[in-house]
Length: 66
Image 1 (cartoon, rainbow, N blue to C red):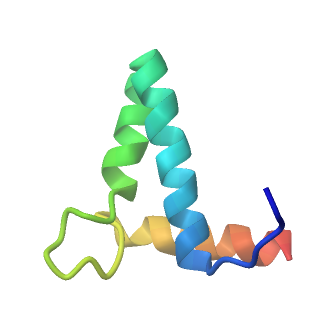
Image 2: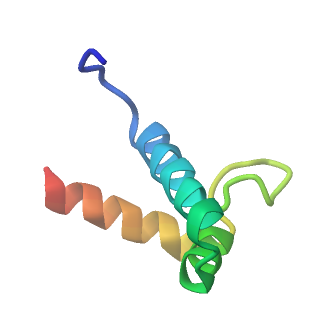
């Protein structure tokens, strides 16, 4: 796969899909709870995760990485 630039939101959603796959394999309650808080599709406007603090934590992780 070529290196491509993605947005911070796309990276968040990629992480969500990765964790969702791990949950399907393991049925881990911890991962399931995390996914519930991270889910972007719960709200009709799809402007952020179910738990807004998850987005703030994600932005802090991005800042730390860069």
